[in-house]
Image 1 (cartoon, rainbow, N blue to C red):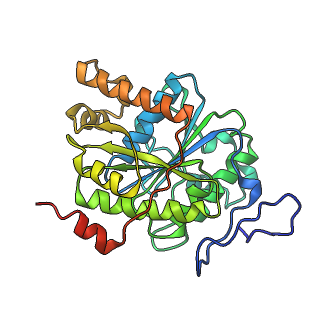
Image 2: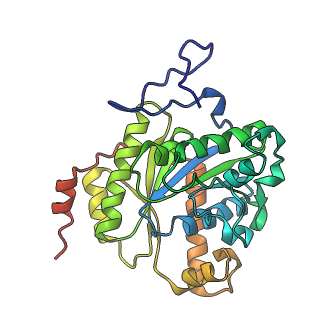
Image 3: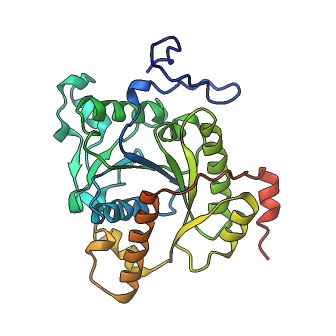
Length: 301
């Protein structure tokens, strides 16, 4: 990956990502065109993969062609869709000594439930490399094999808190950044940092903040209070239900579980969220709090 050649004909004039940034700019040849692209973030363990996978199925139930890209070294984003831990892009590249021209689509793209196409980007060995490189190589392979041309929706499921530019790199490709959070201090604190990351990327890329998905929470009062203070909006609410926990243990999406009234309500919420996102959500101009301010703001009694 190289720095963007600003003199190249037709190149978009991306600026460096923030003051003092040492990140590379997005190669315009790697832009995802034609599909609606969502990057899903949230605190580690908050249920991003469960949310992403069930949202992917909901889009597919609406007749959309969906590609889900897991961006986590533990590569478990898509296992409820494929019923296994799929080999990663990095695994596939290592197998051919990083000669990407030797790869076939079936080496790194796998069909999941209801036709959702699944890719696990993986990550570099612990303590080496950068997640941004992995995401870039994944999108490059998908484009080289023309796998994005017949896709309506792309969902990036991204690991944990945004602590560096590598973790934020999917935002360079996304139309909307979505945040999964619970109704607790740590989740909302992480959300505040993610808002700042999306806001920073929005200065130089087309990504905009789309909204908040409340997850694993019976109530949303603290989420809603934070949203009101910063300019965010809640798009959906998924309570902490045992059927959701069991779906992961059964390696199944919620749309495959045994019917019940509470499950039906969750499925309908996912379908409504997919319809809302497909129709288009307004960009949010939220203003994150300083760490000290949010610490005081979330002083639960």
